Length: 127
Image (cartoon, rainbow, N blue to C red):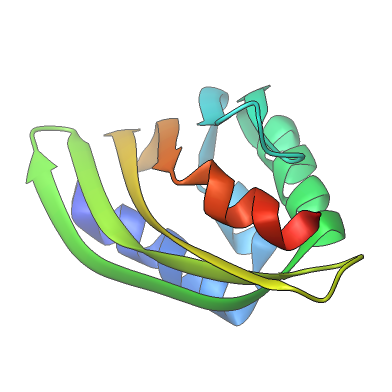
């Protein structure tokens, strides 16, 4: 698979709710990062860390929209742009934000994921 195909398969798995499918594509020492200001944010390592990220995300937000819009490959990196929307688990409020993800892929596995997202828009749904 090309790096873009790998990333697109991760997005398809997320839209199906197939977290084990995503985790199977994460390399053992991969870095997984989201802004630390989010309840599910922080630095994680490997499939176990990515699983912890998804557990925290699911506890805080119910995803109502996930729309990857564009993927740009540069060597083994993929820069993706899209939109995320979720409902706060405790508040029921909806928050949405545009995002940019930077992926690095090696030998068909995710070796790095970095998220850049409007955290204020999401945090407003949690308060």
